[in-house]
Length: 121
Image (cartoon, rainbow, N blue to C red; front, side, top):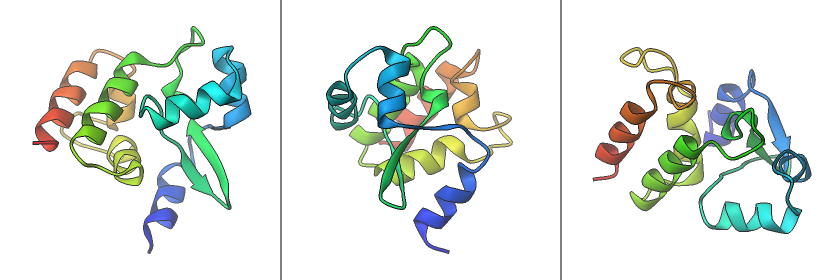
C-alpha cells in the first residue's frame, strides 16, 4: 500500500476541505491559504490532483486550531513531510488514547505537542 492510499484510508472518515472552502471558513483569500500551507501553518493532502485540508485544523470559531498548527510546525521543523505529519496526527494512539488530532482539540493538546517535539529530536 503506498503512502497516499494509506492517507486516503486514514482520512476517509474525516471532513476534508478544498482550499476555497478553507478560505471561506477562515474568511480570507485563497492566496492567503496558499501562504499558510507554504508557511506550514496548515498542511494539505493531495487526492486526484486536488489539495484538501482536514476540517479539524480549523476550530469552531472559524480560525486555525493553534495547537494543530503548532504540532504541524514542530513536526515540519523536525524534518517530517506533510504526509508523515498527517499520518502521525490521524493514526490511532492507544497511549493517548485516540488520535493525536483529536487530542489537539482538547485537554491532551500539550501532551500531543510534547510528543511531537520529542519525535523531531
